[in-house]
Image 1 (cartoon, rainbow, N blue to C red):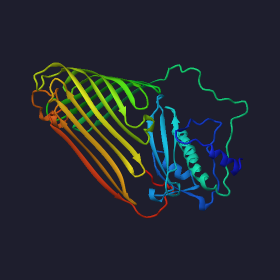
Image 2 (image 1 turned 180 degrees about the vertical axis):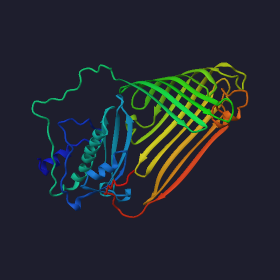
Image 3 (image 1 turned 120 degrees about the vertical axis):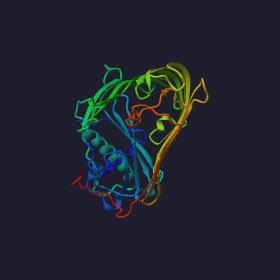
Image 4 (image 1 turned 90 degrees about the vertical axis):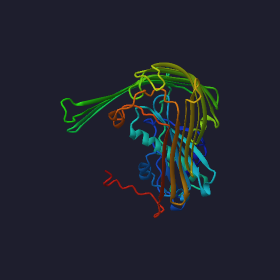
Length: 427
């Protein structure tokens, strides 16, 4: 058992930003903290995808509060998929009040096949280390003990000499569903396959999909009415990093869709991306601008509004996306503009935004909105849609715009604390 003095030395050596918590091994235990003094207890506000109920149940040496204004430490998180198909959870610890401007990031990396029990144990251990570093800044409470089990004598941990898959990760999934009523039956099935390879400099992705939906209606006629909707596609993407702010890539897709009146469509486009903030800051803030230009070739099932059964058109696209997660709230916004170069009037503009804002103690406002100006529906059939096609959404309809908006307000008041976890009648 290490004494508090040794523990303080350990905390002083803790890494700051970008510390990484790797998978737990049999030789590592979650730190155990016993009996901290009430006067030194931290007040913690959790706003993270981090097994919150589990943390509140296990970390008995801190007080969890219901409002960020009452906290000494505000914990946020961000998730990203790793190159091996696992997950990287970035836990951001933001100091408030007496710990103002004391911020730390710790990372938890889990493998693709990791069990939930192992992942939450990693999150618990990493969260404990992050919170204890704040306690160590003032004075460790009397009676605080830390238990650490070192690796067994003679045991060495070595990295694999060679990866037989060369960082490639493959995934295959399939699914089906069936629903039936007396006058209606619906069958859906899908197959998806992906192959991905991610390194510090390269990002390579291939994917294929097949989706089919069949519906049968008994309308008191001799023969039942049957409809189907099919989507098929193969897509690929290759990107290369050019430093902390720039990347270049190549995007492509081949697909067919009964909904879009597309018997065959192929598109490829080189792209360039600029990140205003360094890519390493993705857990806190992102603002990226992308531009691509390429060629699209299409063969249609029916003659289109523009009297085409086959055409090849140049097309370019410009987009910008902002993502920011801060103690005051989150904001996500994006704008995308695309245009066919053979006719400047064939374009599309899409704008979407989501804002979650803390106004005052207990009062939050959530706003979402999206809008599109549509002038690029080249594949629309010339003939009018039948009532069945409209009602069952079997084909795309002509539209000049799309709009969506929602707003919500929530207010919470009452007890300051949020320590108790009661699982009764959860279901």
